[in-house]
Image 1 (cartoon, rainbow, N blue to C red):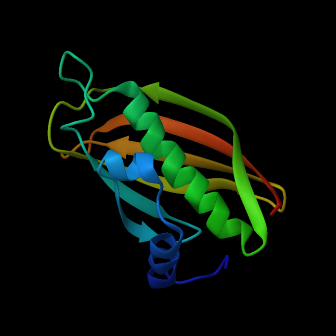
Image 2 (tube, one colour):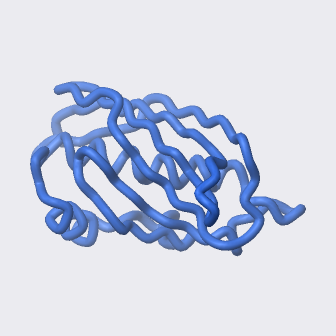
Amino acid sequence: MTDAPASEGLEWTAQRGMGALAQKMGMRFTEFTVERCVATMPVEGNTQPVGLLHGGAYVVLGESLGSMAANLHAGPGRLAVGVDINATHTRSATSGIVTGVCTPIHLGRSMTVHEIVVSDDQGRRCSTVRITNMIKAMP
């Protein structure tokens, strides 16, 4: 499925599901191909006690995008599982919606690396997440 058009990628995510945590956090996938995946998430409901978007929420958005993108790349009969993730938070979102844009750094046969840039409503980068996934045969 590595060369699927955007509409097929969104259909694939709808069939597969995004997972209970992503749904609970209000994520919505808006674009989904091997080369670029985009999702939004509301700040409200995902904040820490002082009203800032929780740092872990940035990571959940990044991991959701990166893992789903790696699985789209992996194709049928194979499974991508996260083996490393890191995030650098450079700005705090306090309201509105954040948008994560996921692009591949490396798309291999057994490993992928993706960068996810999370920006606020004004387009300002708030967090940069990097995830590495290992690809293996489905159990």
